[in-house]
Image (tube, rainbow, N blue to C red; front, side):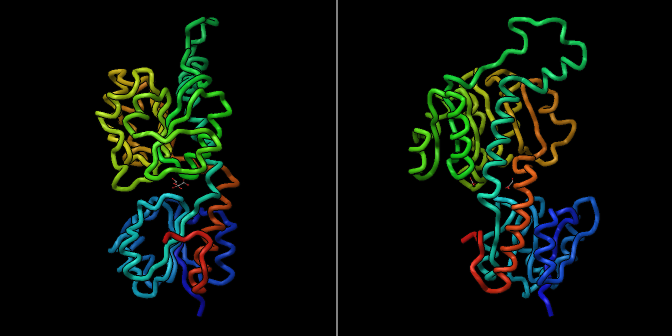
Length: 321
Ligand code: GLV
Ligand code: GLV
């Protein structure tokens, strides 16, 4: 019969799902609320492919539950920190992800968040709506501009580079980057490779675009925030796990740095009683980096093409090697 693919949500963009349905039996978690772990473990039994998102942990227990017929796990994300890659390799289970198609969308959101944070847009709109807008005032709602600033990008992959191209258009004076390897693409923006400590010390804006791996786990800790300029703006659109969040909260409360813009937190969703929501100098978004309509459609189609190729034993368009 046809291969069986389990899809962990019933609201995946339909282009990809329609593609899958052509050659596969597709089974969904068919509720608007996210699948519980217990239901997920039941749902994947007998699946040959799993179409998942970053909210499902793909670990040994889950692979065991799926059984020996599982050939491919494809995630609708570029990040793969929710997948136990070594365990998949051991079992010859191939892994698909969605690079490239979300780069522009995520870079756009990064710039939006950076400007919202530095120019205090959520706070300003709140003032306008609640009577705080008494008159034009020369120093009211001011924040640092990007023109002439030094911007540091931590993690200079596709997204980090796309962010650098965009900030350059704002007339920044210097772009620094930190990355394990030298990136020849940096020539395009004139970005300069520096050590992490150098970057955080010198940058007016510090932007995290680094994948979450053991080397980047909580790289933004208390010591890092203390080394930043007291006027620094910190933006994170990668993973909450790159930040020691308690240290960030303290840094924002004490004005160790000026402000932070976060599209990613620990945990997600961020509980409503988190101190981050009480801080005027923090903008929190609900992990919407790739949420451009075009990007999400392309991501879903790429997931489907990854699964179909893997089930055919063919080359996948975007495979983790
Ligand atoms: C989103 O965070 C992604 O990894 O695609
Ligand atoms: C991956 O992390 C990317 O930058 O595309």
